[in-house]
Length: 230
Ligand SMILES: *Cc1c(COP(=O)(O)O)cnc(C)c1O
Image 1 (tube, rainbow, N blue to C red):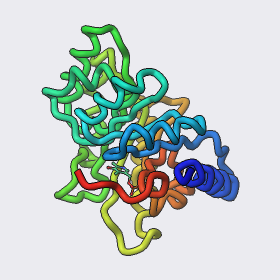
Image 2 (tube, rainbow, N blue to C red):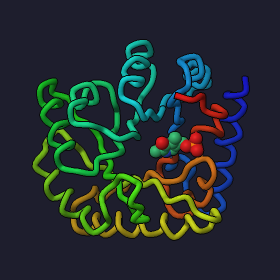
Image 3 (cartoon, rainbow, N blue to C red):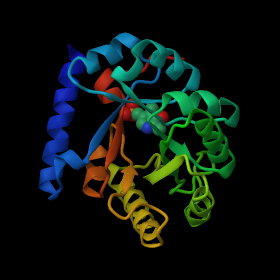
Image 4 (cartoon, helix red, strand yellow):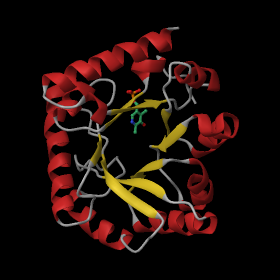
């Protein structure tokens, strides 16, 4: 019941934020981050019609996907190792965390083998945080150039995890920087002209991310509650 109620509240909030800043609410997709939560939690969200979930751990995602099948769509938002590319190629609808050519190439190889195309985002370390993964902003164009030759990958946009900031307003600068970079890459023909996906914003700051152009927001705790330990 609580998950259902939380989802309702978030959708209401997304609607309010979007209309307030002149955006179409349907252009913002909620990714419910279900990492470390059991299947039951996903099923409760699914019963309200929610289908897109974010997972960080490959093994956990694979186990859940084996049970849930095509009733859900999984976005991978964790760190991907190339030796796990085969499973990733099979189970995800989007991999949001591509930040190096090696992993892109490994995914492409495994996708080719099963003749399946996959949407991806480039993860950008917009805050230049040495503890975070993601490619540095100035290297994103080069990575996208290389990925052009990988026919089974479809780059849709950018994703970022912003540094932990003092205030929510501090995140705004990072969100703006990601959008500006995305638009630049679009103008260079490296990202789709018609729609740029920007995955940014979490439980604490998604309202600001929406104001700054987020199309995917990744929310865990505000939907499912406090995460159980690993
Ligand atoms: C866990 C996680 C989230 C969700 O964070 P919450 O604070 O629980 O909303 C979003 N994005 C990524 C990449 C995560 O790892």
